[in-house]
Image (cartoon, helix red, strand yellow):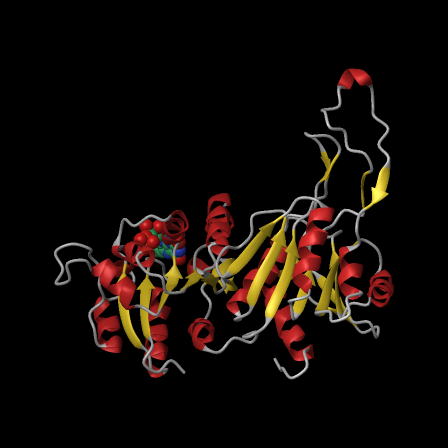
Amino acid sequence: MLTGRRIVLGVTGGVAAYKAAYLARRLVEAGAEVRTVMTVSALEFLGPQTLAAITGTQPAVEMFRQPSVSPHVEMGQWAEAVVVAPATAATISRIANGLSDDLLSATILASQAPLVIAPAMHTEMWESPATRRNMALIRRDGHVVVGPGSGALAGGDLGPGRMSEPEEILAAVAALFAPGLLAGLRVLVTAGGTREPVDPVRYIGNRSSGKMGNAVAAAAARLGAEVVLVTTVAGPAAGVEIVEVETAEEMAAAVWERAKMADVAVLAAAVADFRPAQPSGRKLKRAAGPPGITLEPTPDILAGVAAMADRPFLVGFAAETGPVAEAIAKGKHQRVDLLVANDVERDDSGFGTDTNQVSLVTPDGMVEAWPVMSKDEVAGRLWARVAAMLPGRES
Ligand SMILES: Cc1cc2nc3c(=O)[nH]c(=O)nc-3n(C[C@H](O)[C@H](O)[C@H](O)COP(=O)(O)O)c2cc1C
């Protein structure tokens, strides 16, 4: 599976470090050449001799006074993939912020190889605003995050923060080298909410954060597709071409131009249905009293793609507050190949959340309600489904 692949395994200072020994063994069994880097804290949790015996080389810990003049650069350039398991909150913070103040973080910064991170920590640390911020940066940089799972933590506590099992991490590493599920496909994704000007200062907008569309674009890139993301918000950079737009009109122009070249289009942006017919060229003044704003329809981006003669496989997202039946009707009406109805009424789903509850609706009326999942998981499952529906491809 990983024959001859050069993997750097970083081990940091958490209780789950004991699982890193088994992960190292599984990587070696899969045929990889494994070098390990331990943080100073990791030495408190796992004996370096264990990793040395499994991999055949001593773990590297220190940056200075080593046989290699520049161990971080040497290892960073040697690696075809870097895996950090377990990844503590401290190391995650270093990676997110580009610090290089120990051998592991310097090696990561000095490497252009893909990075797989398996976080492990207590629930409170995982859910702290700082870790959430750091994880958002890590995802935006395009790194692969595995887990954490939910379950028994050190000390008998229960909750999210448990490191994923070594087999799951191994599968994520193997996936880096497998020909992608979407290899050879050109994918177009939209994300974010459009902003329709009222005057030079104000706009009519919506609550979309762009997280779902970003996750769909990032997952497609990871799966080997050539990805264009037309978005109103900052999107994932790694492997994705970004086209920034603001209004429905701009998004329509960008999408219609690129849809002709795409094999699959996933329209996840929240596009305004109406816009001010005559936006003021100057800021409206309070003293003039409330303006009467006349609205006009915006271009229907999805209908435009659906009507193309040689159109891509079309996936539409619909924010739903009503029953799924409405989504079914919409699915038939809009002639999409797959409609993803997004429940925006729940606290754990829809705008701005990291999780989502969606139902898949095909034009023939099949409705499949998925459980609440992270937006990354929804994206991965959606691509598996789309790939299975494309002629000549299977998931
Ligand atoms: C018993 C014990 C268990 C710990 N487990 C974790 C853990 O699972 N995750 C974590 O982020 N920090 C954990 N810590 C705290 C880290 O060891 C500490 O933040 C350290 O500075 C991490 O450094 P490193 O990222 O350089 O390895 C633990 C500390 C102790 C004393």
